[in-house]
Image 1 (cartoon, rainbow, N blue to C red):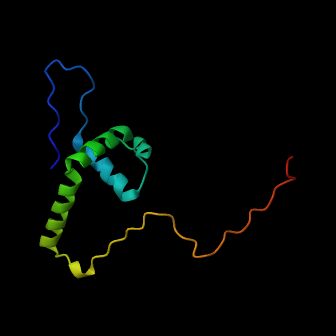
Image 2 (cartoon, one colour):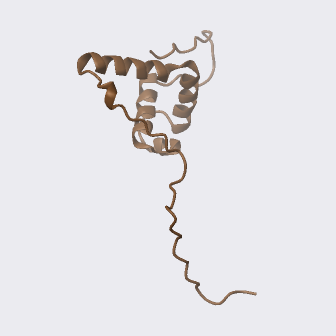
Image 3 (cartoon, rainbow, N blue to C red):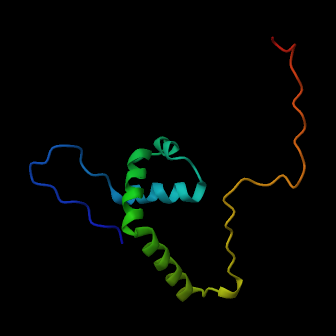
Length: 113
């Protein structure tokens, strides 16, 4: 499902390509945990910057759409998806305070000026 790696001339100089499976594992870990890209540097394998670069390439190529479609089809075949119970959460903004104002911050020391 991943696009093939680019083919370079035989005498190509530069860093070798990283294992795409390791990159995909890191991207899926990030999507599951909500970690930041730089936090991936602490895990073994390619850096967070490398994983982000591949993520951008694969996102533009439609890899994640195809992967999600395949996962849904496989799960629907194995266990069945009850589409009547499908829920979508589209909350992307800040949580509203429901009319309550935050408590005032107490002053520390005298005001300068």
